[in-house]
Figure 1 (cartoon, rainbow, N blue to C red):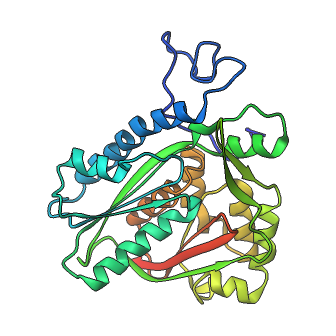
Figure 2: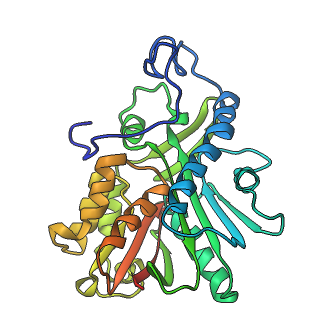
Length: 313
């Protein structure tokens, strides 16, 4: 299953053992018959999520001036803590107390769309705004001791990751066009998180790729999932790399050439599915080539499809 996943490497914030071994070794984080409880996992989230987010912000600061931030938008669905990680990030960065913060939680893989869309709305209402957007997910805090195939396959997809972007009215980078959203009827149970005493249990049904494919074969849903754009005219596809079969379903439904989802497949190969951070990684790869008519698209709990158009600024 791992060999067929299209994933060569995934990353985790889980600490190695004292001897440098795996977190699932006999003396690692997941050692013993009773796996760590939700409290222990959330304690690690409170420490690791801000640290990883700050690493992504540091990387961004080497590419663009992050002075004068007016708004901070943070998306994360793999942990809860209060004060929130948005406040912890803002405090460490030394942001002014007047910076407005928005924390987007538990929306899953399409939360990057929500975060960037919210930043776009802020900038459109205040052209002087400088919005720092951060997505950070620590999915490997939620491994479960199960033997059933579907949860094992779900855990096989996910890794940890964080990404950061600056959204302003400046004409640079990628321009975010009109957003769109839709849902597949009678599919809300196919992707979900269940909060348990042993972390968050991810349920990712094996039906998801087929349901997405069937939905995209419906003209009305397909039109909604591309914001009304003709797939033949789209020259930049930033599709959330939820898994190889999901990318295959999108490619087949829209009759896309092999190259169309190259950036998404490259992110899946290098990082796995990082939930909300994944789409940001795909968009980052698209800065290197001109895009006249792009579509960013992600699927998540609901089963919802959300996205926006974009083009090179």
